[in-house]
Image (cartoon, rainbow, N blue to C red; front, side, top):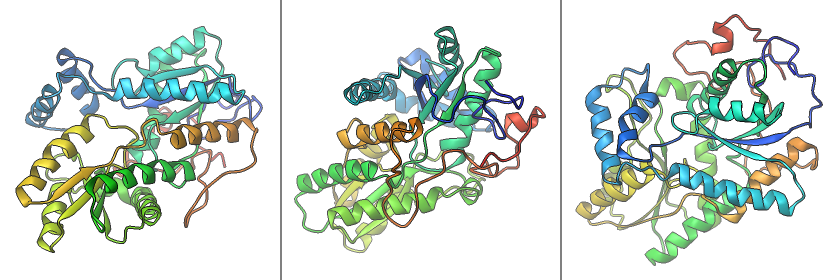
Length: 366
């Protein structure tokens, strides 16, 4: 239980549970529609409070319509959970796994209510996001806090595993997929474009999103022996007046073709699975652009259920259970923190997190 008036994942929580005590694992993700009737309500959930024009929602709804209104993200997360359940069982880790989403069923509040009914008091969450940013970390923590408020006092504490952008399992999974794509292309020296979701530049300044993306990309590029690579962005969704990270993947393809590149491999390293944004932005828009430009293009898979990625999640869980003193990390940066600092991954617009807005304590829990 919490003794400070707020529970994890709020800033400033103090738990009375032993540090390595966890009753369950919670996989936390974005969510996606599973039929055309779900699409607009889902998009309204995603963009609520962000002043996204209705025309943009309708445009994105047409993207979903190309796939029958079904985003593969929920099915992919369930496949990941199945693989992770087997991985945990094989290593003697007896933790039930729950699944909750930010924007669509199963919603986090419903999942936390189920966990409370099952007697779960303290859970460890795995966010399906490798990088530090407001939308990839703090916003999930805020969503969990709001879900706890909805469920009430019986809602479990929820702590998170550390970020994994430089975990060797993440690099291995992505490098393996990139290597396979390079082999399919059959080119001795393709250009390698690493893509990630664009975010507002104000948000990017308040976190290490870009630095971490570049580090993951550098490590994967070195693993496959590619010197010609770049980090680019996709899936911009904000109003045109707000600056977002660039260049967009389509603009980047035109730029590399202009300097004589003929062969390109795209790696969606900013994403854990091949969900609809990957399928539309890369397999439809980027591919059409490549064809018009005369580029040969192959897209690598995301980490998905690659054995190295599943193994990585198990290792992150073992760290928090106290079963391993090792914290594997490769490259220029150390392993990430387990508990987020108060000023970590702020939204960039001055808006406080809901626990601060409600008057709860926000002292750092280092």
